[in-house]
Amino acid sequence: MARVLAARLSANLGQQFIVENKAGAGGTIGTDAVAKAPADGYTLLFPSAPFVTAPALYGKKLGYDTLQDLTGITKVAESPMVLMVAASSPYRTLKELLAAASTQPGKLLFASGGVASTPHLATSLLESITQTDMLHIPYKGGGPAMMALIGGEVTLFLDSIISGGQHLQAGKVRALAVTGAQRLPRLPQVPTFAEAGLPGYQMTHWVGLAAPAKTPQAILDKLNREAVKALAADDVKARLAELGVTPVGSTREAFNQFIAQEVPRWTDVVRTRRIEAE
Image (cartoon, rainbow, N blue to C red; front, side):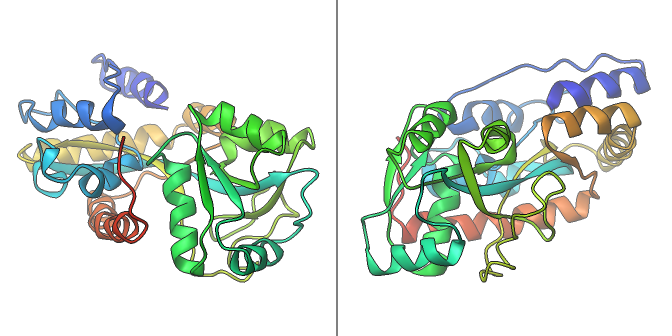
């Protein structure tokens, strides 16, 4: 997604935007690099969900303050999450699954792509809201986690529609609920969490654009305008749709408010569920 946006920004502004992957430590290595970069608008961050969970997971080990050292430019895009079970699962509704989790604490197994990964945290949030306890089975990536679900090694897997789409279409897994305010066009028969009886559950995969906090306002405003314009381009919308995500293009104020709300929300989940980063 970063490259899709970068290509359109490069074309619109006549200046090349280069995407550099700085993976590791839950995205904190790349975030740290941007937080400490010159605040001139030439070094930007493409944050995702781990950006707002890192403060709770790493605490003082972080070399930066998420809310003080960085500022949001726009929320770029988001993708709903889907709660999936194997095609052979006895659970056909979210209500049935949660009833089993309630009466059999620690018996239902949920997969994730690793400790403190987005699926892990998303399911932990579900546990907190429903006051249930399930057993976490971390795998080395979303692919192995999905294979474990298909093979019946685990009870459920809560992940993005991007990772689950082809397996849902093939009938290898079954969706019980999707996040978001509306049903997905590609899964019209699957209810939202609210429709399934859990209106308080809100979670999406998201990506954004951010910069060092001391970047001049004029530069931040221009980057916001250009990013929003790029996300409205037909070719960008089409490419993002192919990836299974919806462009957002929010204001700076809305994105920063979102970040400010997400950090304490995930801090509470991490502490309540006693999640520790590896």
